[in-house]
Image 1 (tube, rainbow, N blue to C red):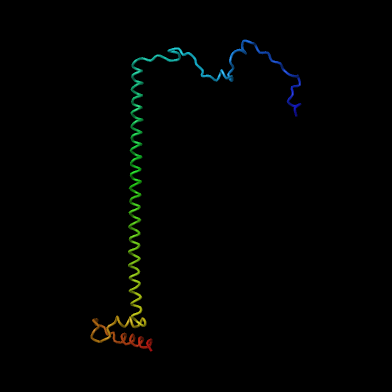
Image 2 (cartoon, rainbow, N blue to C red):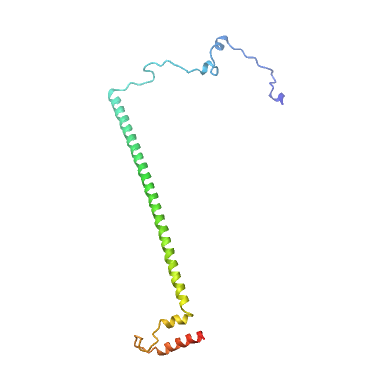
Length: 164
C-alpha cells in the first residue's frame, strides 16, 4: 500500500529563499499576535455633507425611539399577559372550590332523599298499600264528578289479595 503513495519520479526537493523564510508565517506564534494595520484618517470613507450627517443622525434617533417604543410595548404586553394568566388561575381555583362545594351539597341532598325513600318503603308492606293510601276510600271524600267506586273496590281487593 505504501508503494501506491510513493512518487515514481522520486523525492522532490524544495528551495526556500532566506529572505522569505525570515518573515513570520501565517501559522507561526508570531502570526497569532493581534494584527495591527495603521489606518489613515479618511481611508475608505467618503465625505458626507452636513445635511446628510444631520439626516443620518435624525434617522438613527428615530430608529432608536422606535426600538424603545417596541420594547416598552413588548414589556407592557408581557405584563398584561402575566396578569391575565394570574386572573385566569384565580378564576379556575375559585371555580374548582365552588364546584367541590356544589358536589358536596348535592351528595348530602341525595343522601337525605335516599333516606326519606327508604323510610317510605319501610312504612308500607307492599306497593298496593301505598296506592291505597293515595286514594279516597270513603264515598264522600272523592272531589271529582265521575263514579270511581269500581276502581276503588278493585284496588282494595288487590291489596287484600296480597296481604293474605
